[in-house]
Every structure is written in C-alpha cells, then in structure tokens.
Amino acid sequence: MKNGIVIADSGSIFSLAVINRLDILETLFDQIKIPNAVWEEITLDKTTEFYPAIDAFFKDKVTAITGFNELTFIMDYGESESVILYKELRANFLLVDDKKARTIAESLNINCIGTLGILSTAKTKQLIPDLRPVFIELLANKRYYSIDLLNKLLKIHQELPI
Image (tube, rainbow, N blue to C red):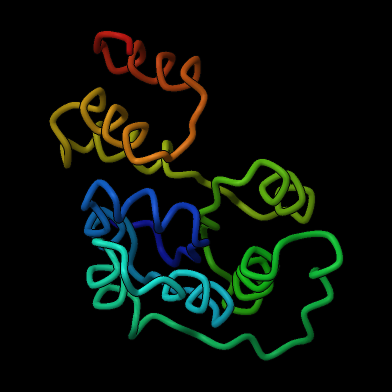
C-alpha cells in the first residue's frame, strides 16, 4: 500500500538524486508533486551530473499553486510554495529536510518526512539492502546530515555506525 501524495522540496530531491534513488518516491507514494518554485531550484544548474535524472523524473510532476504565497516572509521560496501546494492538494506528506522549514510546516499541522525517513522506510520495505553505504555516499556528495542521527538510524536497522 502506497502513502498517497507527497510534495517534495529541493533539498530532499538533490539528496535522492545524488544517490540515484528518486525511484523510491514512486514506490512509496501514489503521486509525487512539486511546485513551480522547486522546479526552478532543481533545474537551475543544468551542468550537474544528476540534472538529467531530475529533469526526466520531475518534469511532469510540476504543479502551480493557485493561492497567494504568504509564507515567503518566513521561509525559502521553494519551501513556502511546497507548504501551500501541500495544503491545496491535501497531500499526505511534505518531503523536506531543512530544519527551520520543517518546524514551520509542522506548526501548520503538516505531516513532514525527510530524506532519512524515506531511506529508513525504504530499508524496512527492503527497497535498499543497506543504509550505511547510502549514508556514506550522501556525505561524500556534500549532503549534510547529523552523524549522530545517521548512526541512530544505523543502530535501529542493526548496521555498523559510520
């Protein structure tokens, strides 16, 4: 059983793209949507090695918000549009890694999940064999996550720490 609609923010998209696992989103969710602001962010640098995968995966998942974006004063443009799109589509999850954005979103009663939550779920569902090499690859590609948090997840999944 899939988990409905997820609205994805750019940070999580980049993290899943650098480990070549955008496909996990299609396995876990019925629909993946991004607002125009996130599309602009993730397609800004067309020279990255993972740009073609991002473009191919998300070009048909872009959805314009219909309301006014009143959140740009308190959060990033992409994150604020993601929150609005979540509310407009009555989505099930907001995929966001940024701590400030997540705190604001959760204060608005938005159900958030981050890249590490997606990867932990993927491990539980046996979509990936081991988290440790994935975490090492994230860190090697300058995707910044707390080593303590990574090690807590590795312990939960009975894997060796980093």
